[in-house]
Amino acid sequence: MTDQPTSLAGLDLRTEIDRLRKDRNAIILAHYYQRPEIQDLADFVGDSLELSRKAASSDADVIAFCGVKFMAETAKILAPDKIVVLPDLNAGCSLEDSCPPEKFAAFRKAHPDHIALTYINCSTEVKALSDIIVTSSSAETILAQIPEGQKIIFGPDRHLGGYLARKFNRDMLLWPGVCIVHEAFSETELLKLKAQHPGAPVAAHPECPPSIVDHADYVGSTSGILNFAKTFPGDTLIVATEPHIIHQMEKALPEKTFIGAPGADGQCSCNVCPYMALNTLEKLYTTLLDLTPRIEIEESLRLQAKKSLDRMLEMASSTVGMGDLGAR
Ligand code: 13P
Ligand code: SF4
Image (cartoon, rainbow, N blue to C red):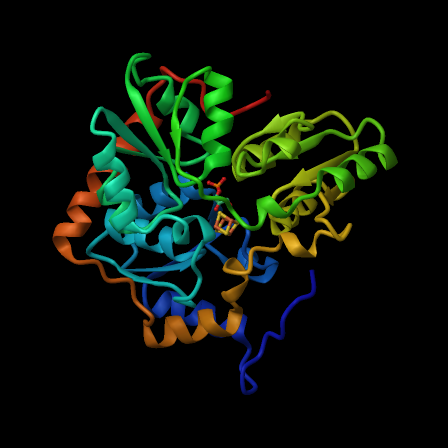
């Protein structure tokens, strides 16, 4: 990954961001899919669940969220008294886009005996229409606590929902959304890569389609994949998720080789999340300088959405389930 320029009109952006972070009493939170230079200056880098917990527990006045909009909105829902800024408000998510609140409300209405177990990659409005939110690292623990007979709608990611339904042998009504990034991996190219690296395990995010997950030795959230990378016994790992996470792997284990799973063109460039990539050092600097763009959420909507998120945080801490999705 090439570093982007670190100066804006002659400024040393890293020094300036550091100064502003102190002046504003700000915490910089970053997802593993952010550019390496942003991950390296963040106060905390994590998966969706860890970032939500960090936002809820931080005593900073400002949260500069380097991730996508639904993640920054989650931070604002859980920490309403803080100023939450996102370097680029256009940092959306194809899963969120696939699930307009009006259509989701109509779907729920058509299935009144189902609860809505909803992936965190959705709008605040859809969270407000849901019963329990899950992340990929908490989905299994939470699903294990839902009684067998309870009917479930799972949205918006049909691949994560399908993976859980198969693993738990549970029927769930799946919303037909996909992540454009994980959908772009190619089974044919993955098999070619495996043949070139015999014995190298594959770690995949559950947003991947079954054609990829079926070849994985480990399936889990970004944090789960990172932990697997730190503990697998070999020297080469094939990584089927957004490739910026490889930065953390290479930092932790410079002696090992991490290869991004390929897209249809045989390269992994099509698996860079275009929304996550919108955040840059320059935008982070101006965001901290101006404290814009801010995330604002109407209070009754926030309170309604908070219910399903609070449920997630309570249930994810329960010891009943098995933690991250783990080995297949
Ligand atoms: P994680 O919760 O595993 O970090 O996933 C977030 C995401 O958007 C994956 O595409
Ligand atoms: Fe959304 Fe996919 Fe990007 Fe994650 S990688 S933020 S699911 S588009």
